[in-house]
Image 1: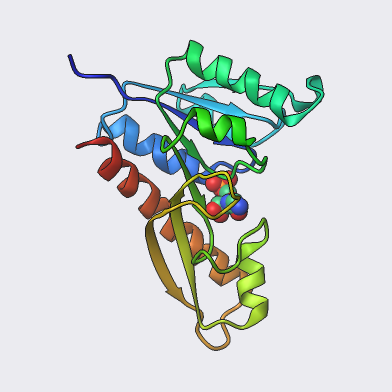
Image 2 (image 1 turned 90 degrees about the vertical axis):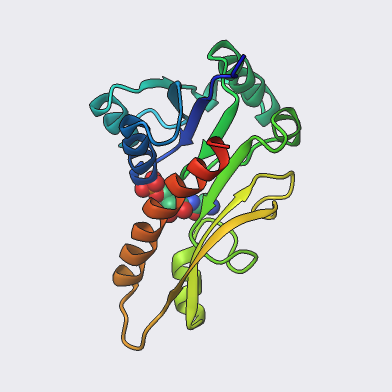
Length: 191
Ligand code: GAR
């Protein structure tokens, strides 16, 4: 019997990557049977996008838990209830506990807006720009217990041309993300 692919997208903010993945799912090109959004931010814009695409949207309030492990236990319970077997982090700004990562070993993917291992952290586009590197990009990697250090699956390089403004670079990075994430998920999910 073929195991169904049930994908959870975890996101905290704008959700443009969530939308790019959702569009690919709706086209039927990722082979996903069931998709949900989980967010830790009540008023995040990604929730509006979920509504637009009729994706089940679950908000888990971090304030209700004493620590990260408690929050992550609730996360695992929710993912199990929804029979989720693949997780895509898309601008999810909470660090996952080692307990969570171990539970879903090699089942969690993350997108990061730099060429890892350079410019890890939450300000990667501006950090690369301000450092003055001539090439930056996008990375998709497995999530491991060390933040932004899991095995790399795919990268897109983006040159930073002379006189390029930060907002132009941001735009190029996001465009590249929206192409790369659905492509990698397709590669990963349709064997
Ligand atoms: C994306 O650029 C993603 O790579 C980044 O957050 C943005 C979310 O945008 N993630 C990180 O920086 C993780 N450290 P989105 O909400 O529009 O998809």
